[in-house]
Amino acid sequence: MLHGGYGTGRSPVGPRDTVFTKIDLQKLTAGVSARTRHVLGSLGVQYVTGASDPILLRDRPSGQLTTAFHVKNVNFVYSLSVLF
Image (tube, rainbow, N blue to C red; front, side, top):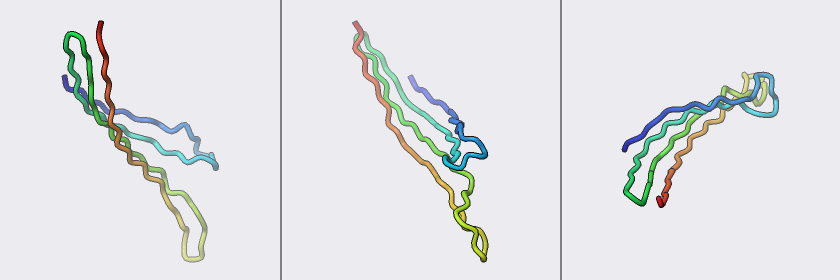
């Protein structure tokens, strides 16, 4: 059987937080599963991505110096069960 999905992970960081950086994540998953009489298994891949808004590092005479965080992650997911 073929499986797939899309999900979001909204950051709980508030707009006035000065300690933590808000990064909303998006996730894509795809996988396959199979079952026999005594074994159940699945194998999949998950891709997670997200980016922060620009973060002010310093005010300079020539303009503001900003940066942003980017998150990209690939996960491999598996499961194996023995059925009685």
